[in-house]
Amino acid sequence: MDERVIEVRGLRRSYGDLEALKGIDLHVDRGEVFAMLGPNGAGKTTTAEILEGYRSRTAGDVRVLGFDPAAGERELRRRVGIVLQSTGVDPFLTVLETVQMYAGYYDRPRDADEVIDLVGLAEKRNARVRRLSGGQQRRLDVAIALAGDPEMLFLDEPTTGFDPSARRNAWQIVKDLAALGKTVFLTTHFMDEAQYLADRVAVIARGEIVAEGPPGTLAGREQMQARIHFRMPDEAAPPEALAATRLEDGRWEVRADDPTGPLHELTGWALETGIGLDGLEVLLPTLEDVYLDLTGAQVGAE
Ligand code: ATP
Image 1: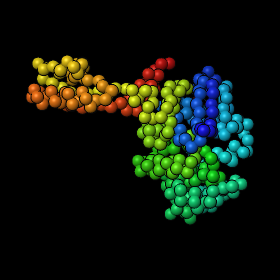
Image 2: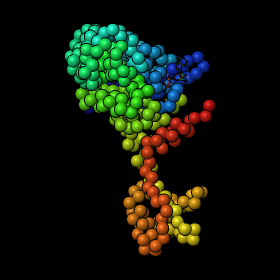
Image 3: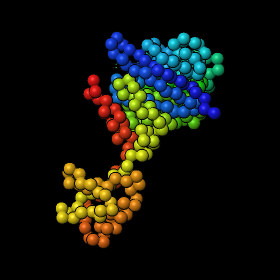
Image 4: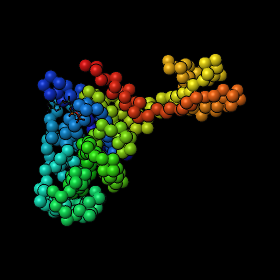
């Protein structure tokens, strides 16, 4: 049976007159990678920090591993790893010394060398923190969060400011954590990141969750129709059975759940009649379509 690691109901947070969270419900099950995806200012960090116990809430029920994070229970801190935007570590310690120091705060830490290997810093084990690149320091932040062998991890915008190869590395670390059975709650404003990493995604815009589900089926994405586009000479018209419509720019469009049949019919007809299909393309719905639809509709709403 699924075990709820995070359960949130009716979560609200106001900053003065601004309602940053307008009543959010969400849950995360053990072993899931859950992504909260949304544009700047949507309320991702506010949500993450309330779950981490670093920020207070205005209203709502929040449980993390069965605890209310606002109570600041030691046991909860011991079982959860948090990767902050930047951790203030001593620049003169080595990577190994740093991880060992953090491991020392826990009763049952993970082996420091194992943690360092996991985040891909083996070669920098004895390097001083101040000599690490920005990307390597972020990996060290992840190593610190893993030092106590937590059951679950919070990653707040784990790849913001990374170059493409550092992003790939960070993604691999998250995949490795998932393979170890860790539960991961991450926030991001990158769609590809949510798509690649998450088992489930919640899209947040202006303090409200506007869609939630596996990235492949988010907001009925699998039910969105594929579109076939093409151009034809002005005097020609496609076979009626295709129910094609003419777009404003002069292209023709056929919509279908599965484009295979209509595409076969269209290209067969074109070959038979010798009528050219210029710029023929099949457009499948992407997570981006769904996201823009959901968050774009909210932009300018206030
Ligand atoms: P980003 O992707 O830019 O980090 P976010 O989705 O994490 O954005 P939050 O940082 O949670 O968004 O902010 C949500 C809203 O609350 C924003 O309008 C922000 O300006 C406001 N806000 C956040 N923290 C505070 C604060 N301490 N005081 C006042 N307003 C705040």
